[in-house]
Length: 317
Ligand SMILES: NC(=O)c1ccc[n+]([C@@H]2O[C@H](COP(=O)([O-])OP(=O)(O)OC[C@H]3O[C@@H](n4cnc5c(N)ncnc54)[C@H](OP(=O)(O)O)[C@@H]3O)[C@@H](O)[C@H]2O)c1
Image (tube, rainbow, N blue to C red; front, side, top):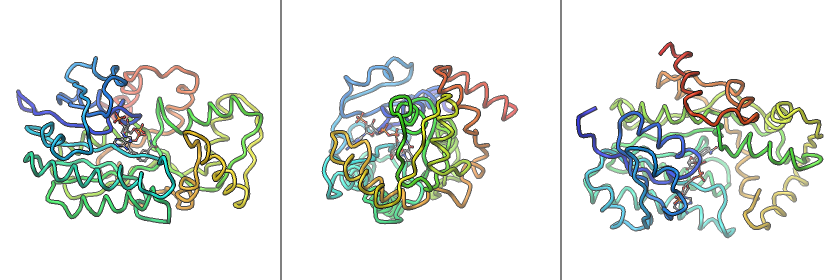
């Protein structure tokens, strides 16, 4: 790293993955500029040395170009699981229009390196979520940027929307009715995802390549049962047949905040399991669920350095 490293600009850096990636980038010696739609809600990142958080209209090409000027790279983590409406326009705005704007702004600012967060199975099936992710990937690949695309399966770790979310539901509900119980997911540890981004930044060989990031495959029912076992609970898990699962998703999709939606239901029809091990290609050994989730659900994993110690032991570092 040079004496005066140029900043990495991160979009969507205030969310779950960003809250792990931004400190990791800073620890690797990169100044980081996080652009958020509302800086005021995101004060915790701003206290990290080397990290600046600014409010910005991230959908404006000229605003982005101003912030990108002089940057080493842009990391786009923006993504949504649900839109406010139902017609796909919310997904299109976040997943397709925004990457197009980012690519244009990078050209205007003379910045060429782009790390683009996508999802495993982008472009497959008939959910707006996966379709728009596929459209964005096509835009990125057709651009003049020096791009790397990451396609994670579902991501776990402190603050996740998977084990922690099911733990919250299991603690509250007397039983767990589960749509798509046999859907396959391959949870990947957030620290490994962040490591992949950091390694890609330092490796020109990753330019023009797409990395699937995934761990061991589990069904949705296995994930919930694992969570239940960690909590020492005995709640029945009721796998719903498709008609009932559909109805559950349709109903919950009408609840404010959409805890579940028909679009989620459609995306779960495509198993989120990988075929070419992107972590291995980057020299990263996947962190197993067992190494993180039990301690995480006991509330013992607030400190990132604990996990870093795990990683350095494992990697012999
Ligand atoms: N978590 C997973 O299991 C998982 C799995 C596969 C792929 N991914 C992808 O990884 C990325 C990060 O995931 P995450 O779990 O960290 O997501 P997250 O917690 O929801 O954070 C996403 C961030 O994107 C920004 N954002 C949200 N909607 C936006 C919109 N309409 N326009 C502009 N910015 C918007 C928000 O930042 P501000 O509010 O600060 O603007 C938010 O903090 C996403 O692209 C996601 O799809 C995640």
